[in-house]
Image 1: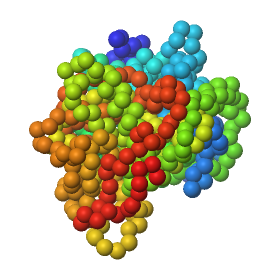
Image 2: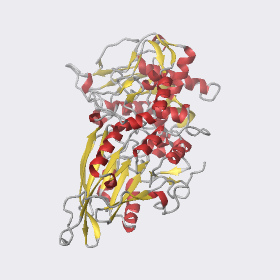
Image 3: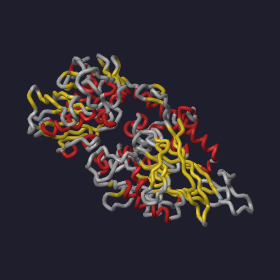
Image 4: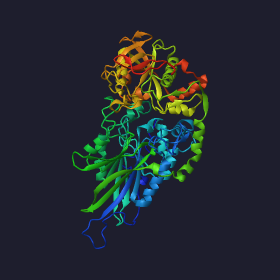
Length: 607
């Protein structure tokens, strides 16, 4: 598959539309401007760089899984229509010519709006639609956006079509051609602002994406793209940007600040490396952080070589916050120097949606609302995920059951047909529920919001045990005796719900009174203890199979089958075929939490 380089030729990415004067001479925007004849005072110029990240297909303040306006316990709002209102306000206050707007990635996946225009009415079809996120971001006037890992979920053609629709560059200095190691996307863009006294301030924006793409979207990128580390690539590009005349260097990094990786030691590069970039690479003034879905109004990191502070900020996901980097530069010794940088975030729940953006995409929104409300079958009972992190509830059994059925059918007649099939499932949202009665596509979207695909991998009994032990780290060690608060025994060491796997088809106990690594007991299959040399086929999502969460063995296990169809669609197809979801056909108590062998909770199958 060709990697279209029409927008990148060597280091000439600053030619044409890649370089722009963001404003002409304008009224003074900064304090301390010298008057005529006051040359003893330094000329100062203030400007603002606004930033978003992890928009994940949110244009409207709407939740397609509930078919209602978005709301959460903190009453946050979401969407580019809200962001647009804040951006317009900042531009009015600062002067548009004194502002830039950038994004740190994960733009075209995450809502049913994004899915619809990738798979149902795809932008890649001849004469197909323009991606709604491109239309909205173009209308708002973005100056640049970094690539996120989820940009690759639908394959390179969809990403290239989205890129083609954007009136701003998509940046990825560490997304390189696998053969030549040359950048496959623009590494950077130079933007030129002009002070009230006519001096040009050159602002460089370097885009960095996540090395985990090589694992998480292996099926799409293997042999085509490679993803070196953020620190290594920043160290290569920042000096070049300075030598090209950059007065201020921003990095838009789709990478968190923790210095950790969810994929263990499968890659030599750190997943959440933004703070490491700030610490180890001299010459950076500020970093717009993404990927981690946390709010960081301002964090200052000292660069180890220069001792200068680098300012980091991460606005909350989905368009819930807008970061403002306020920069002051001073003219010293014939050049601009950064005098100060500060950052803060604005909350989108304080403003109304921009009717210009909602009006622009109202027809697309209505199409998607009609699509997600399509009835596909009925359920004999409500299935709720509220207790899924602590109990073996039917809703996770349902996911795992469908996955196992699909894998068994796929392996029929093969050399693996006689192996037992076990199936993993995770709780992606404790609020997910399948209602009693009519079941719609949006019910399935709430149950399985990610666009993961299904694989089958072969593991031994010993490997399955270690897999389960790793998963059980999720629980806080809790001494036997006394009451248990379900809200306080999960997410140990910050492990998210989606990185806890329950495995259907096996029977086992998880003793949360014991230390991590010694918790799995009574592991059996069909009533018999699981032997170390037994072999099982694990039905597993591609995120986990490719190393997501760092689970042992699965990434290196033999793959015996896979599909490019999303697990959510496999579930939808199952419901459409069967017409009815009957928990009695799949609900079972395969695992339970215990303390020194005593069950923590009591439940019966189907409850």
